[in-house]
Length: 520
Image (cartoon, rainbow, N blue to C red):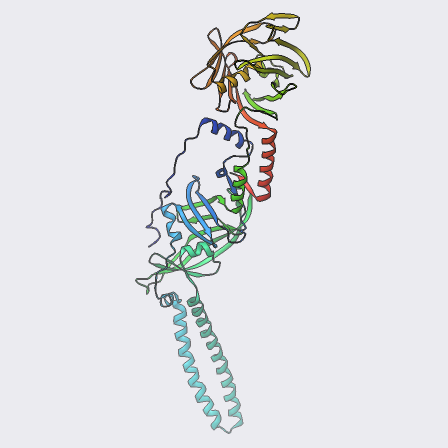
């Protein structure tokens, strides 16, 4: 088709995309939040307020189907959609210029040829009927014979009835022509914005088309909310057209040039030539208000701190189609709140992968920061299904540890339980401690270990040069992953919360529900 098929079918985004290098810390935090249906980044959200309120500005982003690549960005203000960025192939849809032509003269080319022929025949026939009526009326006036007058009046009635039919036919043709000449001439940009449902003329490139819209209600799966909605699809069908440089030749096209799917006040989908784009993000005043709230609302703790409130971290162990979690709870304890309680809770098989027990095991340690930034564990209690299993107490001043009925004399080396090693890894990372000789009390016999902070920011705990525990940490001191080498066990951080962030998450989710904001 002249003026249509010669366009480029592909194009490139006109926006220069700036690539920002996020740290692995931010990525891990964001992934944890996304799994909970949240994000700290407003670009991961969209409004689904498809009914506009007032004349507020909106920004609509569309993606190409089926590839889902960015395809089109429109800005809507004062009820006008304006092209901001997108594929070159879609540019003709937003050209607001309309050629200055004598459209009334061009519209005459669309008059049906049969109508024109019929009108000429009808007018000739009408002229002949008028002549017959004049002659017959003259005969009636001249005749005095009652029988002849009766016959003349009967013939006059027939002729007048036939004349009325012809005049009605001519009027119908004239109405069609007048209706055709009164139809609006629009460009694509006006079609996009007005979405007309009645016939009109479309001026595109060097062609003027007669367009007959076909509208229907369709079930449409919204790409943003994922819900099926009852939308309006309008198919703009080209019936005939003329090249304005040779308007005497009327061409038949019988093809669809554009399909628009809309819901309430929002354009959801555009199908133009070989390009199909779908709305994938809507930015409006609701999202702007949400962004302000989100920027002032912390959804995840950024640092391993728990002053005045508990801090919870959760880890996932995926083992042969089994998914088990390990939870750590940190809080201040002691009369002066100067001690640290660390509680690790999980099934026994998580603490010792060689076991198959599903009993609930808890390791509760109390730690303190001694002189010289020395981290010591003062007390440890281990329970299984709520019953105490083992425990120990350390007397730092006298250098002894009471382990059941045994007394262990200790020097400057520090002793920890399983939960203490986790906190030690964070402590070394946050304080830049490169290496420590430590002992792990796991049962009744302390095990001599070496904890090393690597240049990669990991804390590796080894026994006689062989790696046992490999802790990966972020800049906030959170263990993001633990690898237990003997059992090839990997635990991955999936959540971290304080009472404040839990409350903030609930507040954000409630705001999203109330204001029709969804996570993409």
